[in-house]
Image (cartoon, rainbow, N blue to C red; front, side):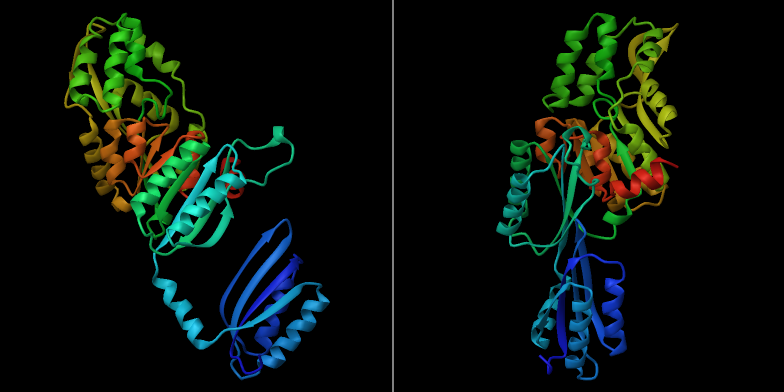
Length: 410
């Protein structure tokens, strides 16, 4: 041990104020060079690791002082010599791919975490770190938060990434929770633009169905809407057919519907956080500008693009003005806004539920299928179905402890 120049310290025990300072002061006194350091604290039980190199071939003196200090502070300490070859191999792993896997649900159980961990191991990936993003869990069921989220940092190259994604999708459906799998990069940590679909995403309805009910053609329009959302018919064709059925509807009905829109739970919290941290926000909707503008004003979106209904003498004509905002157009608009704001596409987020959202989900740095149709879930890399729309914040890496105290209460 005394001849070893590189040593790994593992310290375990009750966390105490000044413990890390006391141990690192000993290393500083002996001019030791710290190569790596990390710690975790669970229920005030500390696990601290320090990898250091003795610079004056005095590792014996260092270990003696550390042992006395550990005894004095009533913690356990273990020393492991590390050979130069082993250390060099470890350093060589630095260039390996790194990913972030987020587990999110109303509750998370050992069964869910075990199943995800098994898939990770089968793909030859190694878990480097695991942290909880949601608050601490009280024993009283009635006091528990509505969400539970754990973030895993893993390293390596998946043997079959597509198969892993498919396994995660099957697992999330079977055990009723969400799994996000993202490459770790500077872009993941610097998202700057988020674009939302409107109907069945920001609001819990399809506005065109609401208009159709008032016009007495509800069943006909709903059937066409469902076909379009499932990707069974072309969006523009379905849009034209549905708008035609609204001919003669009084514009006052639009005002009535707008004031009673069922807003998706969690939207206010999500928007407040996004605006505080500097996101640009946009609504890119295959719905109508009247309702998009209402949400833009209510929640402070920076951009809004949707379809304009033609109105003559206070009534809908059954026609629309301009080009249809379909799937292709949504992707074009996302790209255009990113260019205007000088934001790299890899820093963008897109959120939607229908087949016409897939093009923008596909080009965004992070595409999230929110409470989406089965076809959309299968084709989107990320899916959020088990919690409200503010669950997006966890996919972005934010923690409750930071958000609620420093942002929401300002």
